Image (cartoon, rainbow, N blue to C red):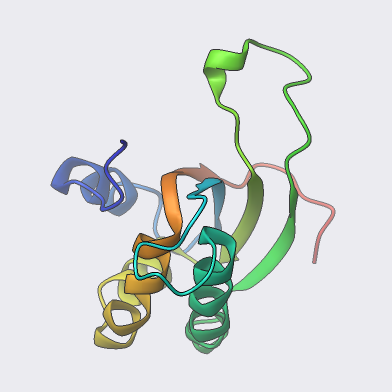
Length: 133
């Protein structure tokens, strides 16, 4: 099982992103068959998490750019991950992301994410080109 909480080194890597520039978090998600709390599937738990967190993202000037079901590996190997879902979330800057994930409100919602996921990888991306507004 992969660790579902960021390490200090990972939080430092986000803190080292350029200040005052947009950052896009590319989320790769693998759901558990059943939620760890026994309340439905992993997908159900993640939906509960998403409903609580979308407001926190928007309060900080962020937005979900794109989300969808992963359909399979188009290039690479299956060892690269058999992900179920991909979501791209844009924040106005690194501080907005860090502020959100370290907030008390996020901690309250995060148990749903932990209950629903087998694996979760977030790739912090510095925006170099975008056709999105």
